[in-house]
Image (cartoon, rainbow, N blue to C red; front, side, top):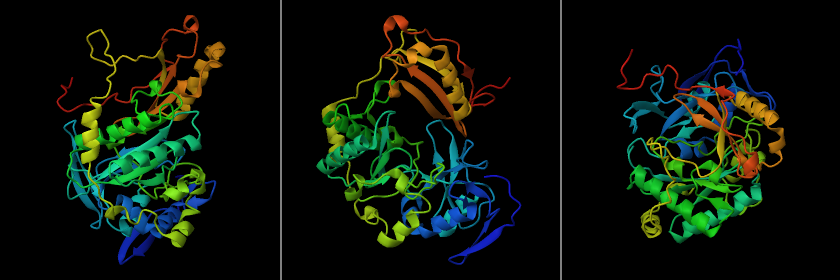
Length: 414
């Protein structure tokens, strides 16, 4: 969001006044969308957006420098938040806690957009019960080289598994390359149990669609498949909820679908410019999701039947670290994605003779969650390179430390 001197505008939303600073600030240059346009978008899909994010503590993912720069993640609600923003205090496994924002109405939607948030990132719990998720999240994440038809095939396999265990799945585009399937559950199970149920679902999808889908957590082992990302159900994870605007140049939206639409729909169809009309015409395809609450009993019974998932071997140096079964090398760690891609380009120029042997999924540029922002790790899997031609691990082209200067709780200071 580039600097702007336009005066603030105050909106009256259902009797609540919300101040929008720099309303004419350009956020998405290609479709010409300003900050005020984004506020109006969320107000036009208010019912659906609040069905996905309302009443849940959320991480504020803020883009103060626009979509071309990395966002920062703010767990703690700003101290000067207005009275119409509720809060809930979450306790994390690390021993830390955070008082997070909870929005409940259209004014709350406008307020988070004014902070520079594009997508909404709620936890899978209600503010009234922070330890028992009421939503299981199935994230179908395609590896490079995977086309949309394969993602759709895996989505229908996941639906079949959900049907077999008595659960209803509600599909939506992720707003990026993949699909999400949301499942409402009774808030009776812990995070650990919900994650186990999600992992069991992923393993069963892989069993039914080997080669198309994978439940392998380690990226270099997945090949050109769709990863059924069960770890999105871990306690510290959030995903972009329904009707969230994603930080792509076309202002794409994570959009709920009917199952009849999944085969023919394409993510690029759904943007800030097109979704309000769709919502006005057909309403929210997820309107019945809160009436379709299910139980995890069958999935947890299947977990016991399948037994523990295969664990990765550990290094023999006493560190206890996981040892990759693939010939993997690390290229760089960087602060931004452009820096990561530049480092990858440099590595490829150094090893030009090997590039032709690499498959799309062999090159991994991963956004990693730091203390308050993303950083990037670049790795290359040499599995398709003849063994005699594989380069050794070299000094990293860039070695960014996202934790530099961070003082951890209980850590002695110098």
